[in-house]
Amino acid sequence: MLRSFILLLTAAALFAQTNVESGKKYPRIVIRGATVVDGSGTPGSGPKDIVIENGVIADVVPVDAMGAGRGGRRPAGDIVIDARGKYVLPGLIDAHAHVQDERGGIPQPLDYELKIWLACGITTVRDVGSDTRKTLELRRKAADGEVASPRIFIYPMFGEPKTPELARARVRELQALTVDGIKFTGIKRDIMEAAEDEAHKVGLRIAHHVGVEETTAWDDIKFGTTSIEHWYGIPDAALDDGVQHFPSTYNYQNEGDRFRYGGHLFREANPETLLKVLDGMIKAHVAWVPTMSIYEANRDLQRSKTAPWFKDYLHPVLEKYFEPNVANHASYFDHWTSTDEAYWKENYRIWMAALREFDKRGGLIGVGDDAGFLYSLYGFELIRELEMQQEAGFPTLKVIQHATSNNARILGQEKKLGLVRAGYTADIIVVNGNPVEDLKVLYPTGIETWIDGKPVHGGAVEWTIKDGIPYYAPAMLRDVKDMVAKARAEKK
Ligand SMILES: [Zn+2]
Image (tube, rainbow, N blue to C red):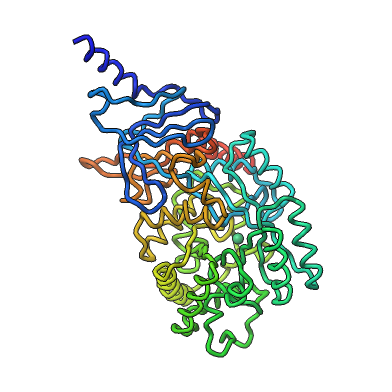
């Protein structure tokens, strides 16, 4: 009698969620009763208790639902996060992002982007082009827990060195800055060959935004690029006669031309050659970070311009940047037609099929959003990318794998990041809802379900735990909303 009374007491105490202070590092945290989707592509499993010790996942303990009542031992912690009925995933990784504290030269608070990322469950970001020195400082502060931020991997823009010797020197210069990798855009073949050779020697990974230019995916295959960003360069490697059939007046420097006719590229690719390109990438271990969501305005401008989260969360500086303006990269929607959208819709169909084929044959696909351009809002757009990967035909479990353990592999961090597993870094999110059923539960604004004629609000990430530091996601989002409201008021 006494024994069962004590056990009953213990069970009640077990789930009493302690007052968890957002942003504080605790030596030992227990997340209780979660259904875990561990990031490896295997299905959900739970209830489980997850023990975090000093920023590392110490244990993931399967718990019989009745275990406590039958005398099963449950781990204890300094704080307890009650995750009964909730899902736990590895923190999301954004493999293609840009740290931005300005848009079009107008300052935008850095915190704005960092807090949206955390509110969206993003614990790691691969920065592929920003103000490198500032981002190096941010990387340090994020690592030390001095600022609420995902961990940052820095792949600076390589630029255009004029000779192979200068390219090698540039690689060594970047390495000396302690960057994590290099980002190529618009690069000539001999420069690329020298830079890749040097980068391999010093152990730097390479992300390549190929573009319509001299090099194509064949060069990435030959020289050993880590990941192809976006998609340009892949259909270009499968053109029958090696040139794009654009109008004679086409001018790559004109972004209207560039993005409009970009939407014609996949239809020009020879389907059989395209498969050879994909096989070549797989054999050479070239991953693919397709960033489909960043181009969505090209197939549906109306949708992108009226995203529901713009109402409260679009900073006026970013809003201004999105307006058509030749001075701002990718702000080219001054004349966008149904014809352009139809081409882009077809482009997406072939692109999505190519992605599925790439995966089926053994290719490594990652997830990135490239937000901050083309009506794409940080964080939100990463969730949208997950939805588009589902649209491409991938099961949600696989989509989640792409954004977690696959991205960790692209970063070369697969032994530390991207899985909910003992020994891994404690980058974990607690979600109110089942993202395997509905990826939309990940949007920080949540979802609405109608029950008995009334909307019931639910979903969203509740806790974003990075390096074992719990951040309360709704508080992050509230801060973002305040920042936006303040900036709008100041503008008036
Ligand atoms: Zn980018």
